[in-house]
Length: 436
Image 1: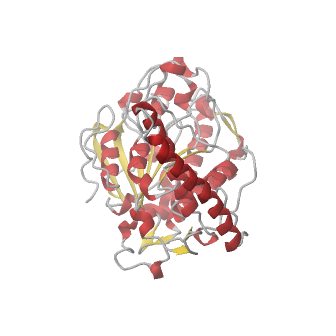
Image 2: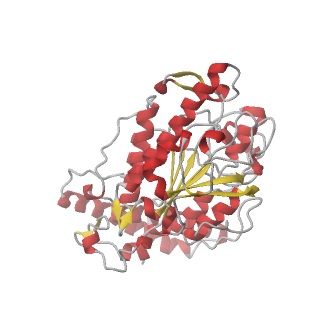
Image 3: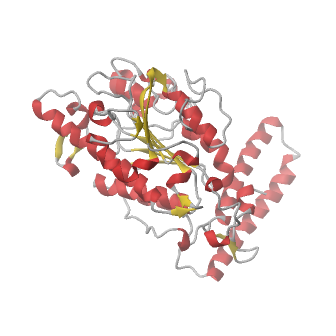
């Protein structure tokens, strides 16, 4: 039996199993420890940062100012890590597409579209492979601002590169979903809080009868298949098991108060960002997934941020062609930090196991570049929130120049229980100083 499901509390009998959230009063002392669950969120901050306004002036206890001042409320639960590099994203021209394509996998992306697309498995997907046994949905890929996803974009790179931060393998991009209603339906498919227990029991029993029939038919068929077809059948049965798990773990209204968002992709980026953050928190509360990626915006081309009064394209502004460009660019990156701060605050507002959801989560942020004018890949705006109950938080740590960010990903994977010893093109060991 799935070890996570064996610990769950359910309403109803064999025909209907509605998973309840982990009420603290129902948990044993051992189950209520801070390491009850650990999760990962990767957040992409597009087109770099004003690093001089982001980087604390001293190491040690965290002192926030400038663009990082908006994180003051969660200061004790974040780390800012300086001089971490992702040199796999360095390619002039093409630094934004290459930097985005490599951001969380640290593998040099290939140019070209279609069959030429190559990158590397991202840290969230390595984690999802380990954690998928505990939840009905292995991972979520979310976005706020939609970009181009087909054709060739910057410097010969596929548009996929600048619009994807999650990769299942070197060929399989997992682009973000920007439609909150569609994501909500993915999470809560078939669940209606107004449905009576009897009605749901009948519906689930009907679906289970179909699945039971498929299982029996597949058992009889398996003996007649060759190796190749047997492998295809195994993939089918794995999918059926995922469906069964979703039937058994349909959430109740008790594990979150999020209502279904309106249909369609919103052009209100501020509202969209808040909804995606709320969806992330609800998905964790209901234990529907433990891995989320959030690409706030693509790195290229220029996108206007009219919702904060900036009409010029975000990417174009980053080159500071005029005196007002820096001011407008600063407004854009300040909003990115606001979105991050909102996510951290929402996670920290939900109690869990003697702490909060944030305490038991690794929230890892980075960008395609650091200084946008220099297209710098050697000093990225890297923050870790929560620390999963493993890292010692509330500090600024400065590493030697060009320390691979891949080493941070090894540390995070180890904290999630994944025994990684290498990652990407240049990750060879966990980062030092993170645990104290």
